[in-house]
Amino acid sequence: MKKLSLVLAFALGTVLAYSQEHHPPHWSYEGVTGPARWGNLTPDYSVCNTGQEQSPINIVNPVPAKLPPIDFHYLPSPLRLIDNGHSVQVNYAPGSHITVSGKQYELLQFHFHHPSEEEINGKRYDLVIHLVHKDTEGHLAVIAVLFKEGASNAAIKAVVNHLPTIKEQEVTTDATIDAATLLPQTRNYYTFTGSLTTPPCTEGVTWFVLQTPSTLLDTELKTLAKLYPHNARPVQPLNGRTVKAGN
Image 1 (cartoon, rainbow, N blue to C red):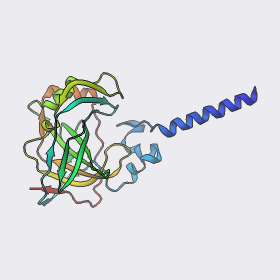
Image 2: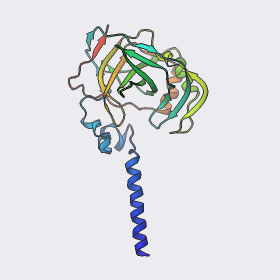
Image 3: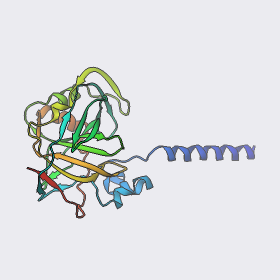
Image 4: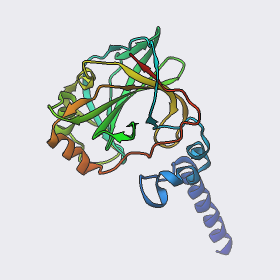
């Protein structure tokens, strides 16, 4: 019996170790699992502390530059959402992409942060949408669209009208969504090299922050803010990086 107990204890320990190894640790935006401690939660997140090109940043005194236009080729997609416990994310159907300087990145998903993670001259906006793209070699590019209160936004309205009632399960709706409606008419941008703004904080991400904000209704903002009152990482040191601004 004692031998059997030892065997069972060893087996349980193995299962627990396997579970811990294959399930990333919980992280959040406050307290002991908040941004200041992300890098200590697991070695997989260490770059959150040690990285030298972390995002978001406070954009101050960007260098004026003649930047290539971003060619947006966004098509309507079936609306598929997931509340992943940190934000509401829209998983986008294949076929939509951006092209910059001849390089094409496919749109994978977009999600929101409240308030905006990016600061412009120390100012945060009411909301930001991050549109996450990847090229054929696996390089990531993120379009950040800042939002302020104003007219309703069709894409955000669609999200608000179909918010998941359960977490961590993708919900497929009978609606469609068009990411192009998230974009402002004027699309000059800031650009810099940064990272993912959530664990594991992977670096080597190309960021394009649109200079002109889009708008959303007060009621749309309040609905998203109630769901996630504060899911924005603090700004990170620039560490000598150059931020360029298109003109």
